[in-house]
Length: 220
Image (cartoon, rainbow, N blue to C red; front, side):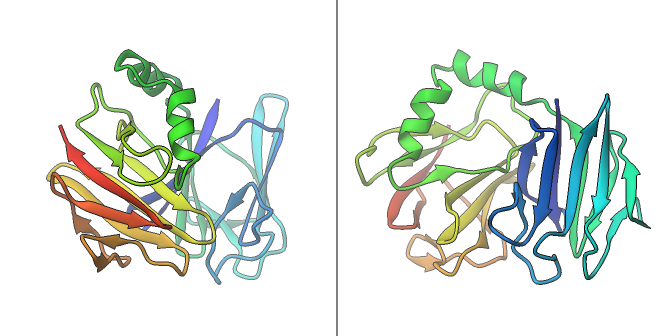
């Protein structure tokens, strides 16, 4: 199963597994992959499966669609291709999510239990990439009905929040974990200070407040 990984300025902001024969990309909220930026058209591009091949088609967008630096109208995709839409780079890759899911289950976290925690106050959105052999950090919910639950940060990027309200991304880097604001007018806070687009380092015990829910970063 393929996936697309969306990044800007070398920072991954979301990841989407391609499960349907047609996947739309654009700024409008009804798209399958929403990229909320004025450089992206409301209905920008269409990804389709035909036989065993995937094709990307530009939907007469204002700023165009590029693959590996060349403007396209419609082109077959190969794994590793870099799609450029505005300032965003979208990598077309193989999906490694099943292996990461197995790691989570081995540590006692199931997709269903994690989902229950997300339904109260926050949600882990699209935005994960390569899995760790064993998670090194987690987010602990401090408020709401799911208070006390822990969600492991098993992947390179985990985005948390409520679409349209506030979304933040926690990224694992060689020097440690960082957090930054991705989208939404309601900026999240770190220990009471507003989180902006600039990445801020996280340390054990830090408190993140996002969309009315308090969470604690726990370094393991």
